[in-house]
Amino acid sequence: MLPSMSDAATPRKRGPQALAARNDQALIEAAREVFTTQGFDAPVSAVAARAGVGMGSLYRRYRTKEELLQRLCADSMERVAAAAEDGLAYEDPWEGFAHYVRECVAFGFGVLAPLAGAIEVTPGMRRTNERAQELADELVARAHQAGVLRPDVTTMDVSLLIGQFGRPAPAPSWQAGEEVRGRLLAIALDGLKAHDHLGPLPGNPPDLRRYQALWGAR
Image (cartoon, rainbow, N blue to C red; front, side):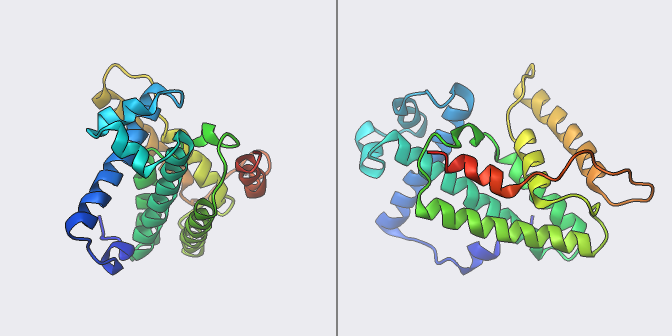
């Protein structure tokens, strides 16, 4: 994996500031795991327990469950943006595009889709989403220009595909689930490649504005 350009430009935190940042990231990762496996009705106490912190520490950082979910959404979009930046750093447009898809699937982008319309979209969430969208558009456009991505595939198509693969599926074990997901993702990536004798995709391209409107339903 290539280093993220955003990571290289960000100064390292030290001392109490670094500890606070680590604790906050532990809470976000714990929230992602708890809500993914137990659903969004899971109590925040389960998040605190998974992160190894007390409820007081959690509430000092996030006053409500909605604030925690908002930060979790923003964190997901930050990771999407970082994956796109990493992808653009690859010289090979297809390898960069494939890296972006794999990274977004690996961290579970898509599991937060049920929150659309259920929580308020903050200005920070909106800004992060716009940046991630611009970088993804650039990554897809570069792949199109290089002739490696089928021309009728849109950024929204890719986002929805990632969302489907980013959700956990029933499997006899975690390892088996990862192996099956990896196989199916490889099949899907091959299907995204431009090649001769392409048949047209059915239906119309998904409308980005309609999907964004779901998050503004509240």
